[in-house]
Length: 365
Image 1 (tube, rainbow, N blue to C red):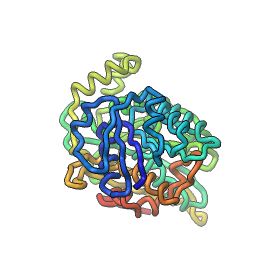
Image 2: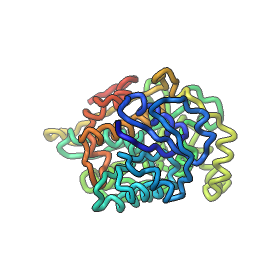
Image 3: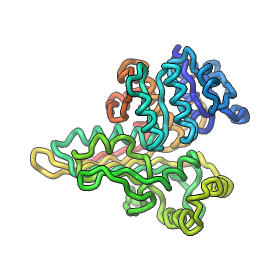
Image 4: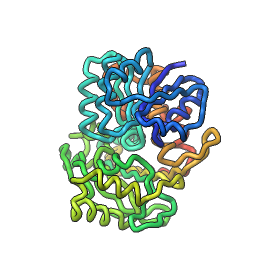
């Protein structure tokens, strides 16, 4: 059994621990600074829990000693501390962050490292990057790559048409920070919450708008190779207008703690959610301009007798698949590893990656 540490015992971290433990191939140490979070976690012989101050480098160093890898499911602002400790311990590092600055730091740590550093292993960035790269490879020349992802309640019942399904800190961060994109072939930054559009899928209308971090390293990889590359978050219509009023008119973009408190005390958590993945790539094949689209909906489900939300399943399955591929030698064992280096067919064939193929999906050329 390979010993791994999962940092953060929230909805996603606890799901990662449970998925890995069920295989019998991983001994999981699940740690958090808040001991009360362990009360919600079912007991498993392959999971041990530890209360650790994540800001304490020495404590993390002791925890990481002798481990194969650490998987960070902690808030984005703690990512770099965990990565630093992993580098000092010489172990593999994986995370879920959408934060661009944190990923740059991880990339610097990976330079010359003897272990692998693989950030952005969740849904978006993560799965969406692997999928988009696979579609893009089918073209002789690329024109546009458009990525759209959303984690939505199946039954919206408030003015925001939204329930908390993921990290509140993460949602706020991606609604505020600048977004990377490729415009007319050049890597640039565009403002979050802008360039709103509407589209229909299965008879339902959605809106999508710029959010930060969803592209991972795709912009660096495809700058100069594609005319347009962008990422937008999917929501039900009306969400963007209200959020922009909160962020801009009430200036809550500069009072993140207050905004977090409002959202967490006003919007209930739900496990009845749906993850929507919508990727469209256009370009030339044999001299003809063609388009390929991958549209997919993934719902909550029962794994090992426990009900997990769609965002828990997709995010946890993403990082577990990459860890599994790393452990089996299917990914580079050292340095910085981009999501687009992961083979999409091998990802889907993995025991964790198969969760992405178990819900409704449709592809059209």
